[in-house]
Image (cartoon, rainbow, N blue to C red; front, side, top):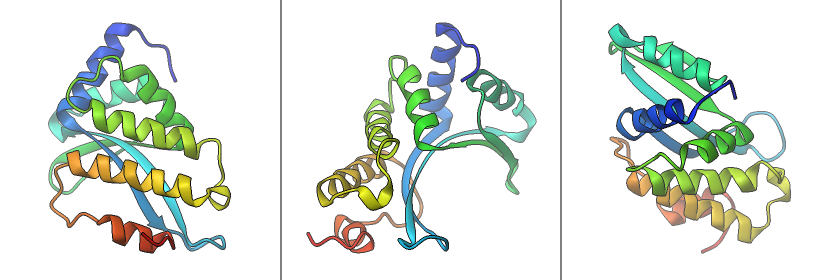
Length: 159
C-alpha cells in the first residue's frame, strides 16, 4: 500500500461505507483443473464528472484499476487476497456501516491468502460459503443472490 495517514484511511473508509461495495464471488475458470476460483473485490464508485477522488484513493492505497462505465459512472476495482486483506485491516477501524461485510471479507482473505484452493478442506470451504452469505446478505444487488445450497453445489459440497 502507498503512504497513508489515519485521516486518509478514515476518509477512504467513509467513502467505501457510502459509495463502495465488498464482494466475494465464486468465478468460473478456464485454466487449471478445478475450474473455479474465489474472487474478492473492493469497489469504489463515483460519477465520472467527479472521478478524481478515485484516482486519489488508488494513489493512497497503491493498487486498483479504474474503468469508466457506459452509465456515466467510474469505478475503482481492487482484487487479490493479500491486497484486500491488508487494505481492510487498515480500513476496518474506520468503517462504520459495512463493518460486518468488511470483517467477513477480511476473514475470507485471511484463509485464501495462505491456502491454495485445492488444499482447502470441506470445513474451510463451508466457512468461505458462510462469509459469502454474510457479505451478500448485506449487499444491495439487483441480480439474484445464490443460496447456501447453490454455493455448496458449485463447490462440490453436500449440505
